[in-house]
Image 1 (tube, helix red, strand yellow):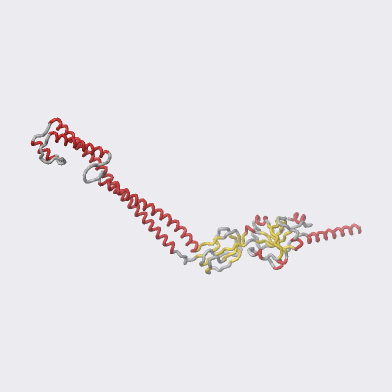
Image 2 (image 1 turned 90 degrees about the vertical axis):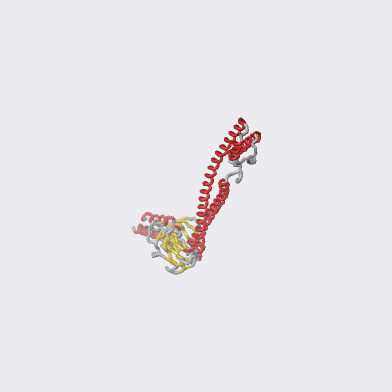
Length: 390
C-alpha cells in the first residue's frame, strides 16, 4: 500500500511538473493589446470650427458628419461676375429671339404681298394679252380705222410708240399689234417663271426683294442667337465650377472617412482653424489587429503567416489568429498612426502583430480597441481541458 501511494505521488508530481514546465515553456506573449489604425480628420478650408456634442468612444459610420468649418469671408467676387455674365448672355438670347420672331413676321407679310402681286400681275398680263390678240384679229380682218377710230385709238393707246394723231396705216397698225402681242407673250412667259419685265423694278417686285434682304438679316440674327446660346453654355460651366470652388472654400461638413470610434479631439469648438489643421482622430474599426511583445527566443521561432491563438483577458474564448508582422525590438516608429502606443517595457522586447478575424466578426469585440489578452504560438498541456471548459 505504501509503495502504491508512493508511486501515485511520484506520478502526480511528474505530471504537475510537466504541466508547469509546458505551460511556462510554450511560446506565448507577455502582453497583447487590441489595436487599430488611426484616421485623422483635417480642415479642408480655413474658418470657424463647429464640433457636435459627442462623447469620446462613441461609434461613427463612414460618411457621417463629425465636424463643420465655415468661412463667411470666402471670396465670391468671381462668382458674382459670372452670374452677371450669365444674365447678359440670357438677355442676348432673348433679344436675338425677339428679332428673329419679328423679322420672320415681316418677311412672311412681304412674301404674302409678293404672292398677291404675282397672281394679280399674271392676271393683268393675260388680260392685256387677250385684248391685244383681239385687236390684232380685228386689224387683220377689218383693215385700217377711219378718222374717228384713229382718235379713239390715240386716246386709249397710251403705250404705243407711234406719234399721236399720226396717220394710221394698215401695215403699220398690223405690225404694231403683232409687236404688242409678242411682247405680252414674252412678259407672260417670264411672269410664269416669277420674272417680271417692266420699267421701275427689276426681275422681282419690291416686296420680294425686301423679303430676300430680310432672309440674310434673319440668318445673321439666328447666328447671333446660336452664338449667345453657346456663350451661355460656357458661362454656365464656368459658373458651376466657381460655385463648387466657393462652396469648398466657404466650408461645410467634415465627414468620417471610416467606420470607427470617436478617439481624440485635437481642436476646441468655436476656434479658427487653418486649412490642413488636424481636428479629430478616429479609430478605424475595420482595421483592428493585435499588437504584442515576446521574448527573443519565441520571436526567432515565428514567421509571417504562422498560425496563432488569442485569448481576451476576462473572456474564456480562444480566437484563431495569424502572424502578420515581425517588427523586432524598439519598434516605436510603426505606432505613430496606431491607436494604442506601446509601453517602454514593450519596446524592450520584440514586437509582433497578429490578425484575429474572429474579433471583427464578433459584435461585442469588433472594436474593442485597448482591451488586453495573451497570444499563444505553441500547444500547451492544458489546451484540451480549456477546450472542454469553453
